[in-house]
Figure 1 (cartoon, rainbow, N blue to C red):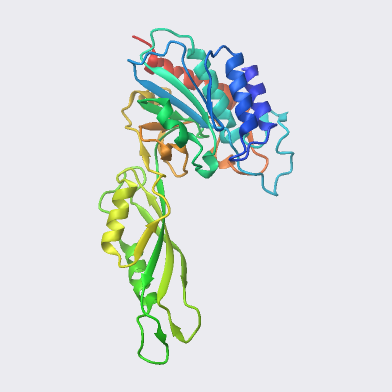
Figure 2: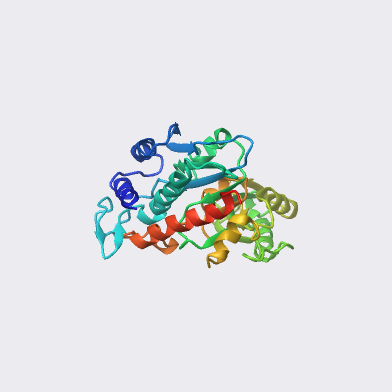
Length: 351
């Protein structure tokens, strides 16, 4: 336990803003090598390794968390890079999100590293750029990780089981009209055309609803049009925030939108996909048997970039993430390590 707390303290003391995680990647790679991992892989600021007795004939479990952080806000009263322990709490930027998950998953991986006769391989991937959904994070190394059966994604959930996560699309829409003088019956007002489409976004309900999230949520959040009071605008631009449930893919939702609105629709990205793992999956069942509850997560993580079933679970509390004077309790890390190991024992050990 002590060496994992010390590892987390080293990570906290080393700034690792998204896209600037090279030093914490060095720390993690060195820690794995120093604890007996024979082959540690690295690309950009992503670090990964496999169990010693990796068998390509067996399926592989991905154990993933991120070691980048957001930048500290002005409300901090402590030094965000001073990993102080007080009253059973370890303070510091990234302690809760997601350093506690990083060290707990690392502990679980090392527990199984040399084990023989496992039903699954284990791939530990400690990745970068999660906080900005960056191109050089986990997405960049997925082709190198090989075929994966399912994943455990470490984020602060109180070690409860987030079995689904909403996807996210941001749509930039353009309604086209024709310019004219406002005092005469000229032109086609693009604002009025946009209003029809905006009303559709406000009122449309997708037929399939998620048991965990309900319906797909679409919110128009920005509208821009016009240059001066006496000119009928030829163009109206508006932006839509779309939260996609596990009942649809991003592409399916996009196709429905384009079918119903007159405006041109340009998705900024369809990368951040909704995720879901069946509640009857063995890894979920193992957690439920330990008294943990399942739920749908309102926050986005690297699950959105995975195309495999994944469970989001980790020590800490999501409410502390990105907040001032961030902390994680030492007993949360201890419990997290124990629960990860117990759940993987249930799933991985030969009966």
